[in-house]
Length: 256
Image (cartoon, helix red, strand yellow):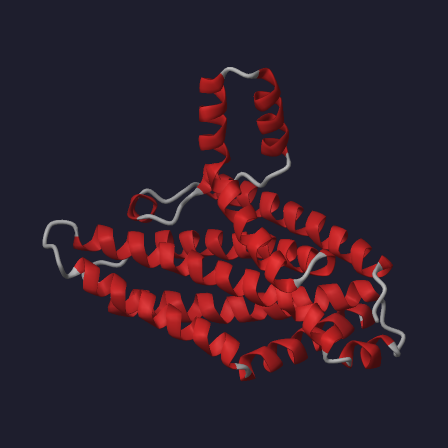
C-alpha cells in the first residue's frame, strides 16, 4: 500500500507539472482542431455524415493519445535528469522502478483526461442517435493502446535521446498496424530469410491490427465482451513487458 501511494504521488505531481506546460496545451488544442475538422468534414456530404464523423473522430482520438504517449513518454524521465531534479528524487529511498511507474501513471492520467474530454465532446455534438456503447468501447481500445505506446516511449527514452525515442515509439505504433501488410509483401517476394524475419517481428509486436475498432462499423457492430476482455489482457501484458524493460534499463543507467 505504501508503494502504491508513492507511485500515485509521483504520477500526480508529474501529471500536474505537464499540465502546466504548453507542451500538453498544444496537444489539447490539436484535439479540439481534430474534433472541429471531423464535424466540418461530415458536413460536406449528406449520405455518409455519421460515418465520416465517427471514422475521423475516433481516429483522431487515437492519434491524439499516441501523441501524448510518445511525446511525453519519451521526454518525461530524461527531462528530470537534465533539470537535475532526478538527483533530489533518487536521494530519497525511492526505488527507480517506482519512478518509471510514476512516469507511466502520469501519462495515464493525462491520457484519461484527454479521452474523457474527447468522448464527451463527440457524444454531445454528434447528430441523431448516438451509439454510446460502441463509442465507449472504441475509445477504451484506443486508450489501452496508448498504455503500450507510453511504456514503449519510456523504455526507449531511457536508452536513447528523447527525439530518437519519440521517432522509435511512433514507428513501433505504425508497425503494430502494418506488420500484416509487410507480411503480405514478404510472401510475394518468396524469400525465406525475409519471411522468417517478418514472423519474428510479428511475434514481438502487439496485435493492434486485429482489434482496429476506431471506425463507424464498430460503433454499429459492437465487439463482444469476451473480445474486449482479451484485448484488455493483451494490452496489459504488453504494457507490463515494456515497463519491466524500462525498469531494468533505468536501474542500470548511470545518471550524470
